[in-house]
Image 1 (cartoon, rainbow, N blue to C red):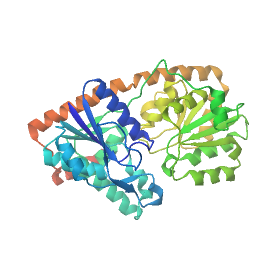
Image 2 (cartoon, rainbow, N blue to C red; image 1 turned 90 degrees about the vertical axis):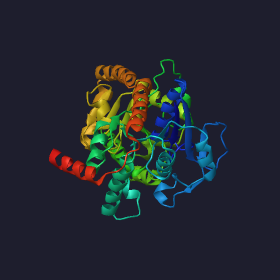
Image 3 (cartoon, rainbow, N blue to C red; image 1 turned 180 degrees about the vertical axis):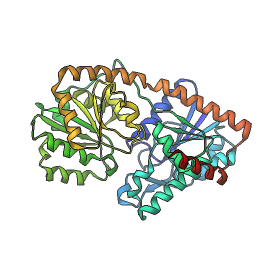
Length: 406
């Protein structure tokens, strides 16, 4: 089949949505499908991939979203899309390119699948609107947008329940992204990596990888480090990534007196991230807004156990206790588990073994099978019933059903 992916975020940005796109796109292409990608133009040197089309775009004006792009319609891309004979459209974000995906789906009569990657309700602090209005707007956009899709992909059970409560009544398939598990993966020399990022060589490393935004709750990890240093001085926190909160987090680290025990690496190449995972003792994660926490699986794939806050998305991966531990959103409890794993070598070795096993169970090959089935079912539904139409009656029914469930 011929698949057109629409996304508001792509390289040179680095985030979980891009990782998901690349993994699924690669797998689908290996299976003989043709996959085109429509994404923003970042005003960089144009790429050589003939399957990637770029929308004209500018940075958002909001200070906290400066790394994101606002895309504009393109008649040239419209004509190019028309010539591709696309069988199915797959949108990744319900913003500008998502709207264009909806319009193209309607205009050319092509089934449309949307992946609800992000719990936007937890990102309303970025919107220049009153909080109450922002939350109502997020629910309305989610309900309207998803209601016009053939099917919706949810990365986790909790996200599925959340968007049902918003009033989304489209069929929803639970399909996590999955990860590449490479038994023969090679790693950079740990000592050279530590020298490169000025990381002390005699410390046990805790690592976080992700966007440095308020929703990632990284200040919680800094407080964890500060409390742990009261009982042990052999820890160092490596924060990999960048974002609008970096300066504030550096100030927080200084205020807590842990600046000498924290390294902010900024963005690093993806292949280096696995080497950083490999040289670290634990992956630590405190976000409560993740739809799936793919980065946990990436850490576990190289045998690095995880300590994470029990929250949406993450809980799906660690609820059985294999490969890591879940904690409440409480600094003392998080500290206790980190210290216990680092102190109890028998427990630590067991968690390392479990981590690799867990990653293999969540492989991208398995998840691509599910996504391919979702596409095929969407095309079948379209042939039988045509494009879906948002229904106020169904919206009221869904609301009543959600209230009764409570």
